Image 1 (cartoon, rainbow, N blue to C red):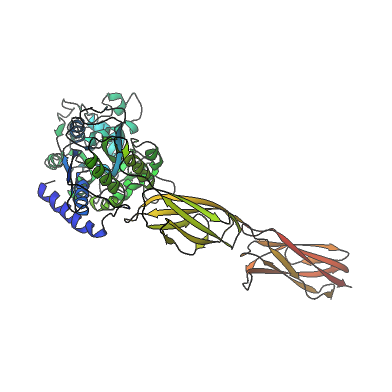
Image 2: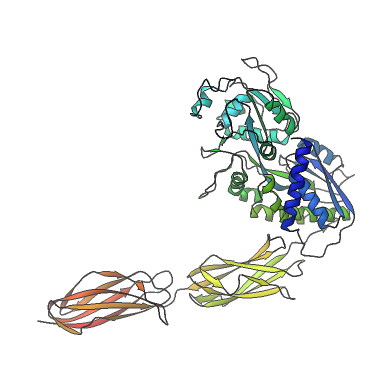
Length: 581
């Protein structure tokens, strides 16, 4: 991508997205004039420039974040050399991999913070193949192309999954183009190829190339005399592929989309061929969010599609990461850095989709917030995580009645708004409440369903992100029901009918009534059961009826039995009728 194109896109993004609204911290912040030096992976650079620009405006020009785009390895090297306060990388870095240099950091550990989501797009230059009918690829096919085992686009394995094309249409040699050493996309692609390689003895895993930012691609010519070509940047790999018929390459989704490259749908773990989009990348992140929450260095490559999702997961999806020391040597720089990173992983996420990045799942945001809250200067953290507690009284109520829930907030919060939600049906007196001077506020909840009720209070930052939650559990008991029964007429001859109507009074009673009889006489029911239908009234009622035809003379006691439902207990009623000969 040209510098002119990149600059125009970023300027447009800043202009449009800044209108959404800037982050307003929950505490009054004082920022000194500081420049945070950083750099590394080009993958994150487009959105990083937007974040840096908007945060500079928010701090009234006090804080500048200078991010130098290069590659993941260069960023890590310059960070370790003390040139950068933080570095961007596309490969997750375990906390024990690097030890702090006492010249530049007080003491470890290293923090790896996922800050946005993207994908690695595989693209090609094949005459006649356009975005309207892209060529499907699998992990094993991509591996065999870069291992020089597949050398032509009309290889049987490619034709088998692309019935739209004939062998003659794809009769072109393949020219593999790769990113040179240090690129984070190498790490992500090689992770995918390793995870989809069929066995340790065949394919990528048997090649010995492994998972790395520095892949030793074959240097010799393939069986058609074609040699693989290296490219040092996202723009150069796109240029090389565009200039060579039959070429294949890979790059980040921002570059692929903004350059309008013809991108391959890649087979995911469910066997579906999926293109890299914000939606498909988000699905991959949601599927593995709990793993990333537990370990910020967890790779989501080849993630499954979440159960019930309507969008498939893109298999070469990835987080991009920022690495930094937990202990900072400069109090003002560390303070500005912690606040910048907090803003990036919360309110700053809204800027990603317009630049083809996914948004962090809520679980990962929570994990990031904890990591950022550990950044400190001589043991004193720059950010104090707030907390919320919720209490509801009474703690046990019957369905249809209400409980009062109060949230109390603590930890560096001066005020704000709390949003309420529940896992069971019911209504809040208000969906939000505003914290008072004691950092408390209350609502009432009228239950609409029996069971174990969880009431959730989410503290909202200015940008709309749920900064933290508080929860309380309330037991919602069934309501005691009451069943009545009438069977007019009181007395009738054999063969005559009695209309038996049962009514259940409770909380929206549902279900069926079962009829039985006892006594010296007998009747024949038109049905052994009837289904309740709502009636309404001052108390919620439901009714249903059957007919009872006199069969033998005598006294008959007819009983109507209601077994109850999720909101109502069981009850019964009986009525005596006389059957005359």
